[in-house]
Image 1 (cartoon, rainbow, N blue to C red):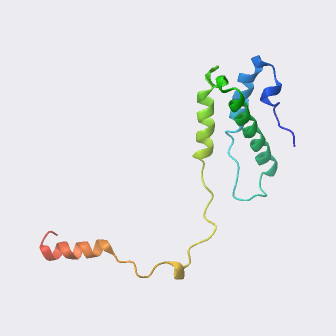
Image 2 (spheres, rainbow, N blue to C red; image 1 turned 135 degrees about the horizontal axis):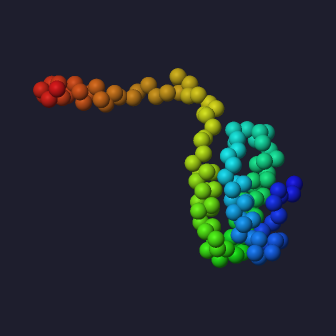
Image 3 (tube, rainbow, N blue to C red; image 1 turned 45 degrees about the horizontal axis):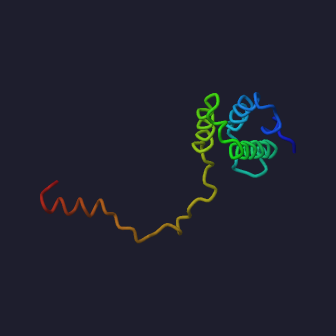
Length: 118
């Protein structure tokens, strides 16, 4: 599957910083990872764009100093790391819950009542 945008190393140097910004903005779009079947094409495009960004930054680390690249990069990272997680698929069955848990709060309250603190 081809990338939506051209690869960073294939464009002229003066177009790289704006293209990198476009790619970072594209990668800010949240995708649904609750099922591998949902948004398959979009996930593949995002994976390819992220790979291109990573390859290019390794190849040309000096690009990060051009045109304020840190802000779009951190925005993209934050939008992917701080996204909502899908709900748990498996509920904990009642029989899986521990039955020998001690209620520490009631023990402490009973001790405090006996000592006259409550």
